[in-house]
Length: 419
Image (cartoon, rainbow, N blue to C red; front, side):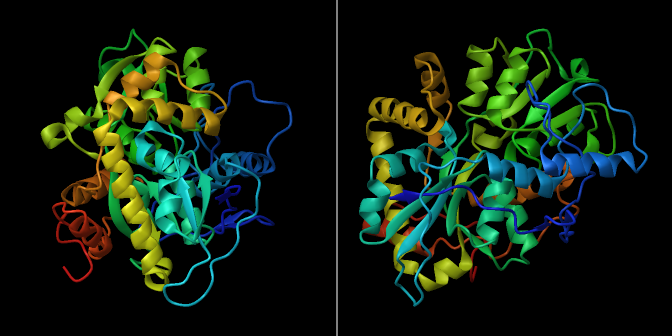
């Protein structure tokens, strides 16, 4: 199995830093993420953005309220910050229907991506793929992963629902398909101990992994529902910074941010490693306390040209999910070891135990929840209008794998190909 660095953002002209507008997806004002212990040398993208801001009127931000609302720039920075298992260069896929030299797969080193992390680490995916080489890239957040997929740098990725919706809308419904679920639940809004309600958040600085990501949308939507506006919802009651999860932990520890809406294990790390408390467990906001955190998407071109490889990957995912369900204690231990290899340090026993109990591995994409998630994106201000989701799912191959395994079929909620 080869792996490689995350790709460059195709929607950025680096000579002029000119961002292309995306129909249906809000293009927010330029700003920058908060960083802990920022070096004197400035990243060239941020330097250009700051110069641009100085030429235009804007409100004077409070310290630490320099918010990462430039979606394309955030994608550039997140992609640059993404990691890979090695520095090897990825080979391209071969042409011809059904034949592929490689499958290039993205995922996150998070507990909410347990099926992906373990499927890569223990060889289940590669075994299912046979002679097709598995090449992997890890990301911090969904928008960077979708940009990689839309640019053709990867073929498939595990990702949250909001970036998948955005990618589908951005491409006019042509570029991606959701082909399976992966994980339900496993996200929370963690705050300082003295914060007890939404009223205590006015004037505070909060964090999420990336603008337009699943946790970012959940945070902005919840704040608006509780009378607090952010930059994307027409106000400045609360500032939201978008940054890597490790930065969020450091800044929360140092008191420079007041809370964050994060996936596991980062929500548990803010609680156990940094003394935070859960203000909102996201599952309490959903019927039956179940919501989608991670699913698997694939480029439509790869799906069309290489259905055998896609089916093999799905077989590997179903196998890995069954392994997790049959022996969760072993899965928890192996997941922590794998996360340690990807990030440089395993989680504490307390963190892995707490975070693992917060997730539900599942191959069901919970399609009936997707329209609500899209509505939330509009409410949160990361989508200007709700896209037509018809055709976003293609569960044909997953249901074939499930039939072969003697498992019940899953529903596309009327949003599938030919539904």
